[in-house]
Length: 377
Ligand code: NI
Image 1 (cartoon, rainbow, N blue to C red):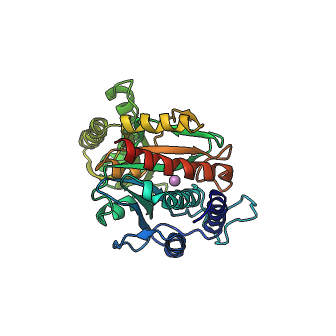
Image 2: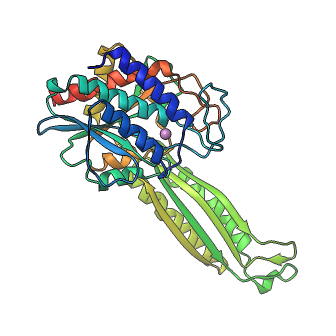
Image 3: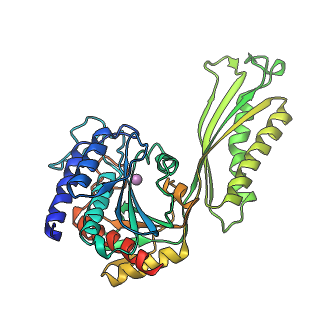
C-alpha cells in the first residue's frame, strides 16, 4: 500500500526524470521503459499490446471500461528554462508538457490501484507515443487498446491558467489540420520576351491573393476557417520567367463541412486561375487530423466533478492548432481536461514551464473522474 504522500513524491520524481530525459516522437524507448517499470513497481497490469513505444495499463475488473490518456513524446526544441532538472538531451525538450501528462497519468494509475477493489469496472491508462508526429493515437487505436472502452478522457497542460484551474470545453475545441501543395506549370521564357512564355509567377501571385477570398467570401462569417499559404517558390534568377511555381500551405477548420468546402474552393481556384493564364495546376491535399469534438455530456460531467472537487473550471478557448486526441473521439465519446500549469510562455516555447504544484491534484482528479464515470454511466 502507498499513501497519497508517497504517490505524490513518486510522480514528482518521475516528472523530473522525464523532463531531464526527453525523447522525440516514435523514439520514446527509454520513456516507455520508465513507464513500465513504474507501473510494475505499483503492481499494475500492463496490457500485452503490440506497441513499439508507449504502453496501456489496466486497473479494475468487470465489463465496463473507461480510458484516460496522456502523450509521452518531446519536441525538437533546445531548452532555455534554466530549471535544475533541465533537459540533458541537446536539442530535445518536453516543451509541450507531455512529461507532466505522463507523470500525471502514472499518478492516477497508482491512486486507482490503491482503490482497485472499489472500482465498478476497468480503467485503461493510455500512455500514447508520438502526439507531435502527429498521429501516435492511431498506433494506440490499431493496437486494440480501445476495445470495450466506452469513453475516453484526455489531459493537457495549459499555461493560460494557474494551478487549481481546469479548462474544459464541449464541442469543437481543436481544428482539423490539413495541408496542401500546389504546382503551377507554365512555359519558361526570357524575361525580355514574356509573350513567348506562360508566367507561373503571375499565376501563383494571383492564387495567393485569391485563396484568401475563401475565408472572406465563401465561409459563413460566423464560422472559423483558416487558410495559410506558407511557401511560394518560383524562379532562381533575374532574367528568366519561371516555368513552374510551387505553393504550400495549411487549412484549419472546425467542422467536416467547412473542411470539405475549403478544400473544394482551393482546387477550383487553382484550376480556374491556371486555366485563365494558360497554365496547369497540380493540386495535392494531405488529410491530417480531424477536428476534435468533445462530447457535451462528458464535458459537463467532468466540469461538474471538477467544481465539486474544488477546482475552478474555465471554458477553454478553442484553438486552430491540432490535437491527435481527436482520433479517439472519432471512435468513442471523449472529453479533454486542460490543467492550469501557468503562467508560463506558451507550449512549444524553449522557456515553457509547467508548474508542478498542479501535478498531484490533477492526478487525483483524473483518478476520480475515471472511477466516478464507472459508477455513474
Ligand atoms: Ni502537447
